[in-house]
Length: 138
Image (tube, rainbow, N blue to C red; front, side):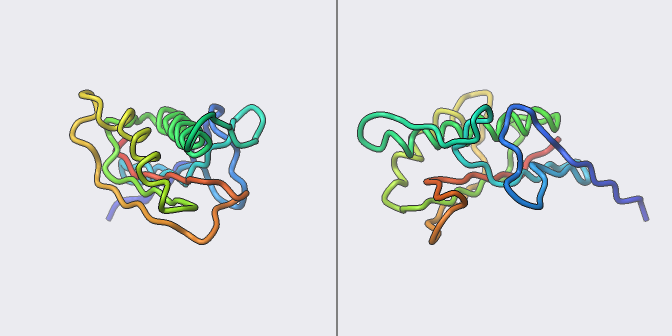
């Protein structure tokens, strides 16, 4: 039997939790990151983009930047991510979101890419377009 130690992670470079939860928890050598929306940490407002699918692309990029900041605060990185879950407001945004996702997870230093699930949900918090969570090794 070993003691079970849980450590809360709070990253300044990511928006504060919107409810009664932690940005991430470290337990048993793993970091469990809560979902990140495309909110600017400075304004707590959704980022906006231009052109076709601009807002969902901008929110995806910001959600991934927020997630990266949480991982770094936990002593981890995208290279150590083993599972990603992406929740979409509209499944028709899959290709736009996947295009931005590839910019982060298909880099040589992050190979192989993690396991992933992606699905549409009825509504996301604050009416966001995308939310991304992950599990990584510390």
